[in-house]
Length: 302
Ligand code: FE
Ligand code: FE
Ligand code: ZN
Image (cartoon, rainbow, N blue to C red; front, side, top):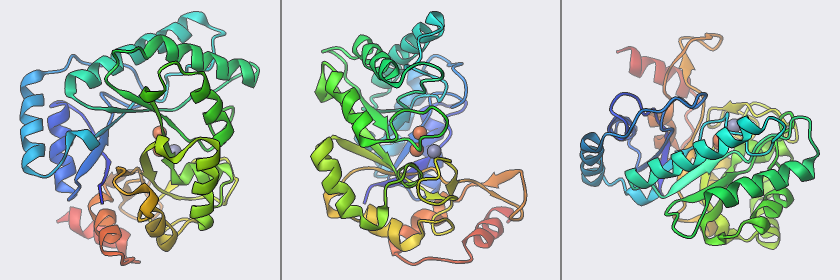
């Protein structure tokens, strides 16, 4: 199983990400090329990048399964403010260039939010933007993430994702990233995951799935909320998630945890302890640990 988590990028760029992923016992990871919520980006340092690639090789992390995630604030769907739309397009072009420099092949992207314009127009804006960004020489595949459908978010139905893919000129450079929390919140029943995959095969085609975000959900099916829970501590539950990530039809696809950090107690607003080392272990061993949160606190406090 190729499994890892979201990691930070920070001062050393990819090197920091790799060190963090290794500390979790992961064999892949997902990173943002800067803060996920802003678009401030530093130039890539090739020296530390080379070091990172060497370290990854020594620790069984294949660069071909490492994922980059574009920042949330890129919105390719809305062109009411043309300068913002163009900013998003340009940022994405640069993000792809950064991935190419790092040797990263996969870039996860939230399709966008329509905010005040017709859904059809918004979807067409996404297509138009992606066709400006993806050309025949692009060496990165853009993975559209399935969304929870919070607010005016697009991409919460397979039909919308399919509509976007249909409009893309270079279809070998577009794929899909499934997010288990988002699928649940969007209204897909993951209890019947094989049926979901049949449905996906019919509408889009399973071969488009290149990455999976593995999250439990704090909310009921079809809640359209998008609040991730730790594995086994949400409405999906440990067994369902274990079955999903071990489904043979998605074998070899990187599975990435984006579950919340843990606070000093359950109500602590300040969440400081990463859960990933423990969640990865749990999923690898197929044993749910109901004391997970306390075990994480103990581990990091010492
Ligand atoms: Fe995402
Ligand atoms: Fe996600
Ligand atoms: Zn989410």
